[in-house]
Image (cartoon, rainbow, N blue to C red; front, side, top):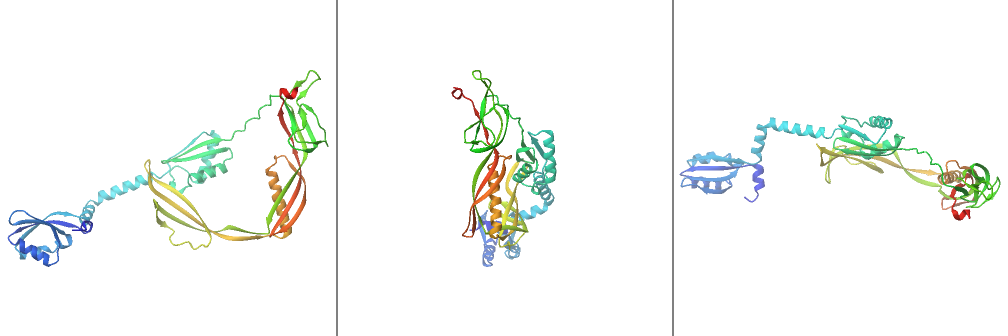
Length: 397
């Protein structure tokens, strides 16, 4: 037969025929459209051949007419395999249940290890993991993925500088780096304090060293503010100058703000889709049908499926489809100027120390061009302008 797979699918049998009317029997089968193959003769009155299971059910009548005796020697194909499976169904069901049980247990959280954390920090971490549902006995599919757990721990536990989360088999392993607040090292080497930018001195406090400027003095960048050389002339003593010198400094900022801006925002509508992923094949499990949202964003949460310590090429995927809407924000010219000024202040503060204060601001130039408000702003800032400069031998000479 040309297509042996079809034969195997529908079933085939090996038939042994014995008797004096063998030739007549074969002719009858052929005339009735029954296909036979691999015909072999065994002596004068015995032959064997293969035929379809469907045809084999009807040959006994023809065998009686030809005075032949038939015996079915071998049965093969899917129908016979299914029959054997049903006969041994108890064993099959037990094997499937055993496999599913091991598969399920291989995807349950059985351990959580926290390394590198102090007991107090570890307690906070485990408490936060509990809130997230990451606990022993929970199915891995029902908790956040590794990246999500890492992000939430970093955001919610203040004592963490960094945390690495790894899922090894059925155990979550966390490697923690805590925040260290080291004491500021004492400045042992002699130094001066100099101005980091030009300014007008508004106040100063010298803890150690000799002050070289006074309030209301104009100073340039690099100018000496507090000297680390004290003592009498001829017998100077070098110390590490310490203190704060507050000066009025100046900054310019350029800001452009559109009067009309389009934003994409979530409206709260979302759809969940669950699927099993085999390579590039995605088999839907829940959440069928096409997404009807016009504007949307898809967030994928993929969990690898494990069997004991092996990672299977199968994944469980949860898709969250969130609908977005286009929101148009419109400012009047006055509102845009206020917002632009606030933006400029935030930008300036990002480049200043926390203690710095914005004393005053003045709009130098204002324009409304191409649907934008354009501002050039001058800021007066009060900040500590003193920075250390080591005293070298050349500087002493």
